[in-house]
Image (cartoon, rainbow, N blue to C red; front, top):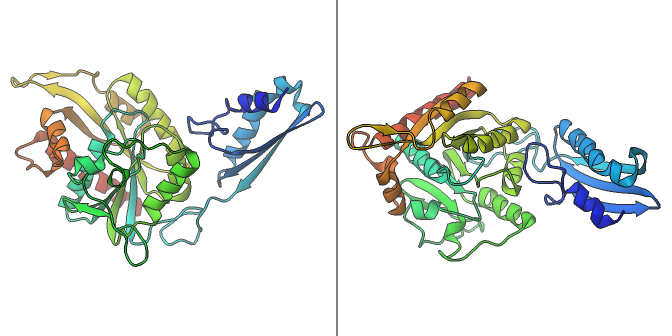
Length: 353
């Protein structure tokens, strides 16, 4: 029994609701071996008592056999309050709001390639077209695409007199993205703590000003960035993006479970790539049919939209002119996003009632 063997065993223990383990999250502070006994010290930031209880149980399950019995394993968990204040205006216990921002909505998916950034961009635009002041934060540090989709990839943000980052504005939306900082071919190579620092800087050190809605375009999955956001920000809800096939829905359920663990309301599901329509009007369901609708019914949440596969949508994103900018009469996709944003506003207003 060695420290390496213990840490390897603990790497099988996931943080509840997330796909990442407690070792890679950096929650294991120390491992010590005294004779034939093991002591593990863990630190978590949460107000949910079920989380340390689950970690405690899973750690024993991972170590008891290795150590030769539960009596030889001592698990110590230091539970701390997440950063923030329960007295923050508009916030909840342990979480912070962003000054001047009325609503914070996350757009998430369990896996990549489902069109989450496309959905985030077009939702932001349709909300702005309804008279709201909207911001969009690209929280995907490793694959930022918002700068390209808004046609401003060549711009770089400046700082104000208070050393806050001034967001780039395009199509009436205030934007922040790692894509503004890096060149097109520059990879982001950062580990968990640095990813957390970048995320916090994008959210709290940006001069967002007065916004009705700030949309957070999350990276796919349930990793460091998602954990940072749900632990520190008072989210008003989340929109889940999926495609109809089961392999995407499986991962979407993981994202939904993550938000449930931290009591973030699911505002609805958007099914992307629902079908491809030929000139003759015949629809081909390339990735399956009604997967998002069935999942929404199972969860008891709205299906906000079914967005078809459309070559113009892809083309306009590449040109920095998202499809939602098109007139509803010219584009059925633009109309679908408009209806989705209307349904989203209904959900947020119901939260206020």
